[in-house]
Length: 206
Image (tube, rainbow, N blue to C red; front, side):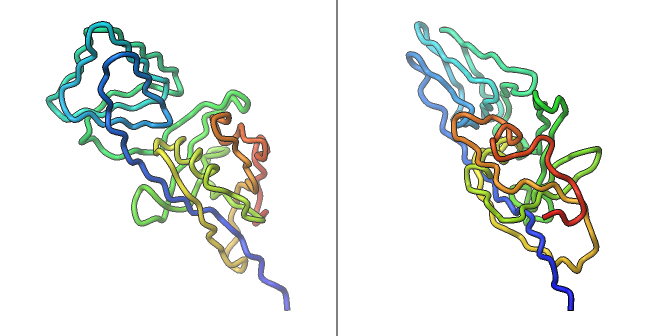
């Protein structure tokens, strides 16, 4: 009797706890890693104060409130890491599109078949189709999940294995076994030293 192959695809839980916008007196740096920031109401950057906003940072304000700049505001985003000023009542994050400098293509991720938009099976848009990300040995760790969640606009994340019985109909998966992403160094999942560029693609490759 032939043995059944077990395919492990990745189930991610992402979350987006906001950071309370601090008092903007003196020199203040708002970072992408602490984003999003929620303001309580009208916000003022006083005279003789400098606020620097890193690219990829989101600031959310209650409707009807305003940001008044009397000091200095430095905010320089990039095409793939925009600085966002938005309403705190706006819809929760959707998957983002990022351009990877090595592959030269737009890499998108999403979560599907979860209880809400913050958790589900991880898929990557690759070669004009959404494909499950799978792992043969399941060596994903929380920072690998956190980096992937940040690429979708969330703040942190965790990962658990999700096994599919190999007797089910074949499907094409993307194999990413052990990303080994490095905190405060890697900015994109494809930059992580354990990820092949491009990832391996095939039927039941994991």
